[in-house]
Amino acid sequence: MSWRRVFRARLYVRDSLWALPLAGALLGSVLALVDVRIDQSAHFGSQLQYSSSTASAVLAAIVGATAALTGFVVTVTTLVVQMATGTFSARYMRLWYRDRMLKVLLALLVGTLSFSFALMRRVESNFVPNLGVTIAGVLLILSLLVFLVFLDRYLHRLRPVAVAALVHGYFQRNFEYEVKRADDPDVHLGALDAGDEQPTMTVRSPRPGAIQAVDGDALVRWARTRDCLVVLRHGIGDFVPSGARLIDVYGGPEPARREELRLADMVALGEERTIEQDPAFAIRILVDVANLALSPAVNDPTTAVQVLDYLGETLRLVGTTELLFKSLWLPPVGARTP
Image (tube, rainbow, N blue to C red; front, side, top):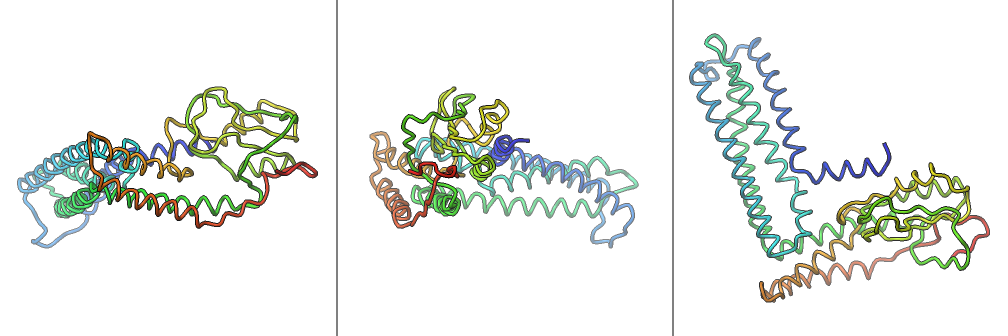
C-alpha cells in the first residue's frame, strides 16, 4: 500500500468517532466469552455468588444504564459542537473530535454494554457468571467516573482562553517536530528560479484538494537514487485544483507513467487542511476565533484579546526559532543551487 493511502487511512481512523468504540464492543464480547470459561471452571465465595434472577436483573440494568449514558454523551457532544461552531471556529472541530477522552469514554461504555449483554445471554437456572456480573458492575462504576472527568474536562474547554491554549499547544508540538524534519541537509525551502530550463518530469494533481502532508523522506530518497532535483510547487496546506503542477523534476530519468504515479503517492490530498504537517493551520484557527469574537454577532473583545495573547506567543515562537535550511532537495552535481 502506498504512503498516501496509509496516511489517509491513519488520518481517517484518528478522526473517526466509531473506530475505538467498535474495538471496545469487540473486546467486551471476547472478554465475556473468556469470563464464562473462567466461571465454569472456578468456584468463588458466597460474597460473589448471585441467583439467576438477580444476575439477569443486574445485567439488564447495566445494559440499560450504559445505553442511556452513551446517548447522553452523544447529546452533550452534539451540543458542544453546535456551541463551539457558533462561538469559536468550524475548523476547531477537527481538534475536538480527535480528543482521546471522548473516544475512550465511548469505547468504555460500548464495551461495558456488549460485555453485559453477552453475559446476560448466558445466565441460566443452573449457571450464573458470578465473576462477570461483578466485573460488569465495576465497569459501570468506572464508566460513571470517566464520564464525570469527561464532563468536567469539556465544560472547562468551552472557555475561549482554554481553546486558544489548546490550539497553541497543538501548534507548538507540531512546529517543533516540523523544524527538526526541515533541518534535513537535503531539504531547502524557498523559491526556485529555473530560468528557461524545463523540467524533465511534471507530476500534476489527480484531483482538487488541500495538501495535507508530504512524504519528504521518500522524496529525498527518490531524488538521491536518480541524481535529480525534486521541487514541490505548493506548500502543505495549499489548495490545488485538478491538474495543477504538484512536483517538477529537473534532471534524472526520462518521464515514465510509473514514476509519476510513485511521486504522486508521496503527496496526500484531502478535503481540508490538517495540523499534522501544517502548523500554520493552528494560526488560522486562532485568527478565526479572534475575528468571530469581534464580529457584531458575538461582540466579545475580551475573548479577542485573550486569543491575540496566544497568537502573539505563537508568532514569538516562530520568530525566535533558528532554521537551518542548507540546500535544495538533492540537486545534481554541477546544478544551480538558488
